[in-house]
Structures are given as C-alpha cells and as structure tokens.
Length: 141
Image 1 (cartoon, rainbow, N blue to C red):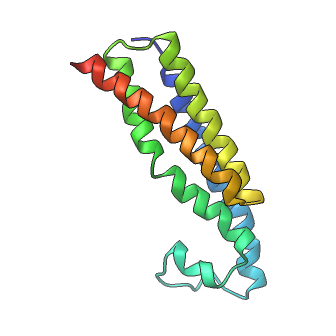
Image 2 (image 1 turned 30 degrees about the vertical axis):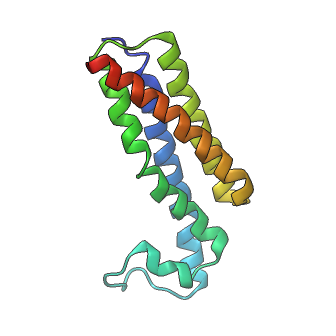
C-alpha cells in the first residue's frame, strides 16, 4: 500500500488541529473580555457563544466545525483508494488539491469570511472530492 495517497489526509488532520488551537487562542481571550468564567461554566455548546462573542472570533470555530464535516468523506475516500491500490498520480494530485483548497478555505473563513470567495473554494473542493469518490468507487468494483 502506497503511503503517498495518505500524506494529504495526514496533512489535513494536522491542519484541523492547527485550526483547533487557533480557536482556543482566540476564544479564551474573548471569553475573558466578555467576563465569562470558563472555570465555573456548566454545560453549553460552542454554538451558544455565537451570540456572545464577536463574529471574527466565531469564524475560526465555524471553520473547525466544517473541518469535522465534509473532510470525513475525504478521509474515507483516501483510505479506500489506498487499500484498493488506486493510488495513481492523478488521485494523489487530486487529494493534494483537495487539501490545499480546504486550507485556503479555512484561511478565508477564519479571517475575512467573504462568502463570494469561500463558496467557489468550497464548490471546487467538493468537485475534486466527487472525482476522488468516483475513482474510489470504480476501484472497488
């Protein structure tokens, strides 16, 4: 089994963790500024902070949540391609393209959050993932 097709997935995992730390680095100071004592907080969910914290702080958390959604399909697809032996140069290039698009999408959403930029990035990434998924399905039949 070639490790090359798995490298993009490993990078996206690492990027997701970078986003998690970015969330913490921006949320904790924002919570302090909002006089929210996280040491005494009980229950609640991250979404509850949308009405309390500035949008620019929440954008990072929104993106982290997005990285826990569609990329799960990517991870499964890459694993299928690796196990099925369909780790062609084309599929590896597509996997890297998906990761690069997700990272750019993250940076846009976490900073300027312009939907006119984010949506085309998301759409292009989704199309890349669709091609990968089709290739994974073909490799299993």
